[in-house]
Image (cartoon, rainbow, N blue to C red; front, top):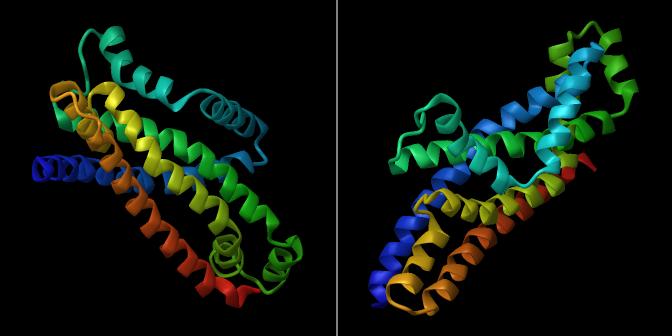
Length: 218
């Protein structure tokens, strides 16, 4: 029984890992674009993005996931995500990417604005372009400043992947919960927690390593 549970949880863990990685791959660049948009001097764009971020950050991720997965089918008359596992994972990644991009945008913006303006002005005096100033002056200092809040959000993402079970995606929590429904046993749920703790533990060690490597910016 233990081997069966372990095998099923590993299958759920793979889905959890897919959601986690894909969300980061899409939400990081989108979050950076949103950060630049909210710093734009064009007020209509800035205001629109600020309202969008406020709405996403102010409503539950679970609600957003339900709307994104079920909404198109009700509005258009057919399910654009299809009813298979791949479609459910895709819808989850879309919802998660939009949600976390909004949170990351605030972190990115804070990191960018924390770099002294005088350093960017010095780059302009030296004849550097805006892109050169960002990549050679702002970015490296920004990374150091955003690692702690970014690590908190990423660790939260690991646990938020469990919300995918709301739309019946077979992730880690769904795998553990299925044994309670089918076999009437609860210990697989506690075993599921061990997988999350290991996942988060590995990420914590990685972030601690990155913070130490970035100490040369002090």
